[in-house]
Image 1 (cartoon, rainbow, N blue to C red):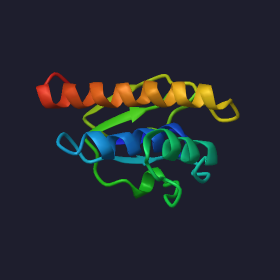
Image 2 (image 1 turned 45 degrees about the horizontal axis):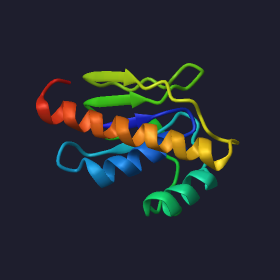
Image 3 (image 1 turned 60 degrees about the vertical axis):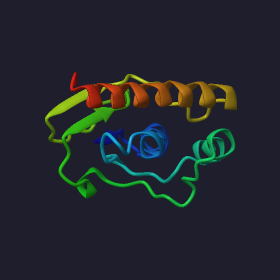
Image 4 (image 1 turned 45 degrees about the vertical axis):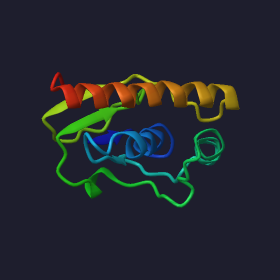
Length: 128
């Protein structure tokens, strides 16, 4: 499972963090992008304060660093999303909260958290 967007700095990193926390019984998780640009400091700060998750020492990764992937979730890039070979792909169409206030970030994080849990359920039930 890989969460992919262009910069691998915010939404895909958030999705990977939630996935590593909540879905280890369903799949291994990674994130990457085509133009890695570093971890978004607001995403790191709010994941730590709101969910107790530390991504501050993580780094943005390029899609070439991904292992073989079965499932790819693109986050809603607004441009041509990165293409990674896989058996199943879907796009979540999530707006990038970069530059927004904390409430927008927290709302985005909660949307991603719920989508990660839904994906876990679909994988475990075999309906994906």
